Amino acid sequence: MALALPDFPWDSLRPLAARAREHPDGIVDLSVGSPVDATPDVIREALIAATDAHAYPATVGTPALREAIAGWFARRRGVPGLGAEHVLPTIGSKEFIAGLPFWLGLGAGDVVVHPATAYPTYAIGAIAVGATPIASDDPAEWPDATKLIWLNSPGNPDGRVLGVDELRTAVARARELGALIVGDECYAELGWAGEWAERPTPCILDPAVVGDSVEGVLSVYSLSKQSNLAGYRAAFAAGDAEVLAGLLEVRKHLGLLPPAPVQHAMAVALGDDAHVAEQRAVYAARRAVLEPALRGAGFRIDHSEAGLYLWATKGDDAWTTLAELAELGILAAPGTFYGSGSGRHVRVALTATDERIAAAAARLAGKADSPLPGVTP
Image 1 (cartoon, rainbow, N blue to C red):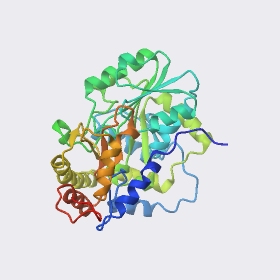
Image 2 (image 1 turned 120 degrees about the vertical axis):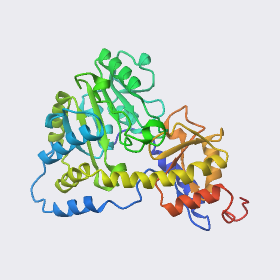
Image 3 (image 1 turned 45 degrees about the horizontal axis):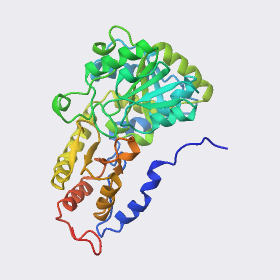
Image 4 (image 1 turned 135 degrees about the vertical axis):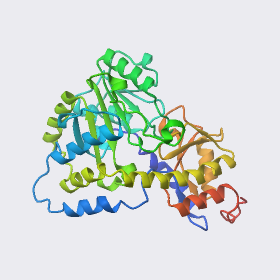
């Protein structure tokens, strides 16, 4: 017996992936945000140094890791004054997002709000406990029964960035409702447009947003994107100490223990900004190739001011666009995965090698060989 959940969305891409693989020069898979670049040596060496991990690790994290998380928030996110009680490591961020409604004791009659265009795990976490997910970007629409609010900035899939004023309004509304509000911010170091090209995007814990207290507010962050650590499952939450203390007790009972070598590697990664800047430059270069190629092929790019994706549309149904891309050997993700109002967009990831990004650009420009037998570029 298992939970009654929707089909896993990416399974529906299999026929298109099969078609794209028939391209003479192979598939260019731009459908997922899984890093393809190597984990930086400084982090790998830290992991190796900590492999004598004979004892159970602490759910709460080592003192060194908690100090590193708090220091990183002060240095990179403009959030000073966090102590050990304000941070908690997690086994990746997806498990935290999916599990939070359960750990908070939510259920039937409770509402979980998430962005209108959103990564599906916010809704899945609510459905799994019998709560009601509501897609809404307007705090005025959030109902009295709301117990948990998810923000995602920079957004997945659309790369939208919420400014300080928008975050402040959302936090104020959450506090009126007595709801916990959580900012999912794992793309914060990957800003491209306007002021975000020069500095990280705003944090929900910034004093300009929350005032002099982080009560009722959490930030969730993952090292998967900035440090190529998706396989490490390295992430953390920070903010309201009372909320985190309650979550810690639940996680201890459930045995959710971040592996000791990963905890050590995380602490090292958070103290090294150089590798983050280097990886950011790699993604910037790939974006500089792929974005004009999409525009030249008739796509409009919406939002996408930060993150690892281009939120693109030709005005057609997303599955029609995906089928056209598959004929070029390119696989992307349909906007239908991310909300009912996104059916004419596709999400195109920057997480492919330089060579594959260049191949996609050439195919979009009609400069590659005939994509598939019987198809004219």
